[in-house]
View 1 (cartoon, rainbow, N blue to C red):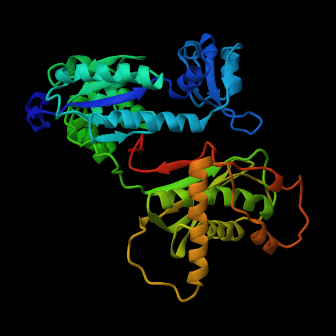
View 2: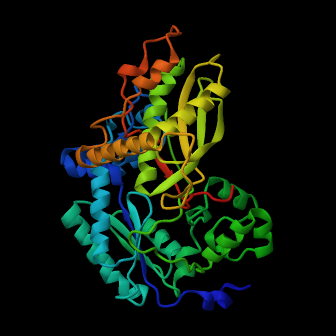
Length: 442
């Protein structure tokens, strides 16, 4: 099927913006401390806490070839005078909130894509992408004035090309991609620039001679399906401008498949006391997010990685759906006891809630447990949610002492207990797994 013959299938009369805050973490740090702007700057995790990777960098650092997610020590080899600052997630969350508020003054259809990006549908005011360029430029100026940050904006007739446009010119630029010009603007770009083409998909396509988005658009559809399945069909449509997906209305969210949190602590874990402290902190963040999204978990998944970097996952179904942290923690602890013999220390742990259902779903009360006590616990955890929301995520933590007594007085095998160490609620591993996967077809 020729691309020209398929254009009638596109959703006509739409104007969608994709707004991307430039070098988000680094830009917030420079905004709050302008002196940092004179140096190659990176936001990085703590090397002492074994989170020593680059989370974000400014353009001066990027010029040295520094990449996101590379170890800090490697980045400093490339740029010895690199300035590395710790992350301040509360500032980034506040900037993200203000960004959504700003965009909401233009439309009720604002769909976040991570903390620093969002789509916005302005079709009501701009029937064509060309008409949307002026609005995009106005939004860029408002970000500079009200947030002290720059954004790049892609303007197009669908979400995929709007996202692509915001990546084409940085920083502080507007790029318009229309039905008339997308073949000349988009098709010459590397295939990996297209949304949902990740590293492995790129490798599969490149091996078969598909190097550019244009190659993908003009590739044989049957072959693409054979190579990538339904993902190949979708990518072929996207390359030809055939994305009719809607920008979700403000407040709506894609269906969340699971909610998880994982962490690598400052040192390896040698026994159940060590593991309990971390599992408590992980389960608290997972449970809080379940409550925020008004969801209940029916299954808990434990992820474990030992000190030789061998990983595995085990899961168990809960007796009843839950968003109570101690119930998630106890299930994870049971999985750990049943599947780990402590012949080797543990490097990292993760807890994930899956099989999610609405908290409003009707269900039968359990006769095997004390519902009154369970409700008290839920009230306590919701109260803690409110306190953290008002005063900060690290203001308090639920205790593990009562449960820890069940572990008895067995001697510890190695270093001092984890009890004095704090596993705060700003661990880098916190994530919410939804439908927005970056590399869907591996």
